[in-house]
Image (cartoon, rainbow, N blue to C red):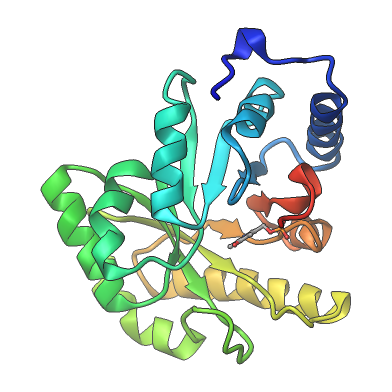
Length: 233
Ligand SMILES: *Cc1c(COP(=O)(O)O)cnc(C)c1O
């Protein structure tokens, strides 16, 4: 069932709640920070409600799931779609077609493939390079030294708007460690910008559990799921 915005039940407690959470968080962060609503496993009805409450940036971590939702929400103008999950080689074409931002570019072959396809489709996606500053088998991401070495090759892909870094601290990192990691990501972005023609001014940092620390560290984008929509099943 797809509710259109007219028939959204704006009196329902669920909707009121979502609206309140969105406005509370929006009011607590600097206006220039992009608030990305992470909607993996979230229904299109709830996404519609989030849209009505002012959300224009949606983050999904699976291409296939996102495509179905984009189709269901195609009547809503001005949505910016963010791919935030690992991208498999065979999904690159669809990802380039259907997302404005890709936050999870973690290797040179992936960047080069995105560039080839972007060229082909005459698209120019915004890219964040996902970095990993602590060993973490659960997470993808460049190690800083590998990224440094790859910079010239990345800078030679002008069809990609490579404009920032993304990172996810290890699950067990305490607040102090998380703050430290976010600060290191910020410093790394500055450092890499000084070493190349890339301008890494975007910092995609912070999720429900740690976004205030991310803001404190200079995040320009935060990716919030459960704090807006409740725990995922
Ligand atoms: C799921 C997810 C989020 C949101 O996580 P919450 O803790 O629910 O806010 C943010 N970023 C990425 C990459 C995710 O996969």
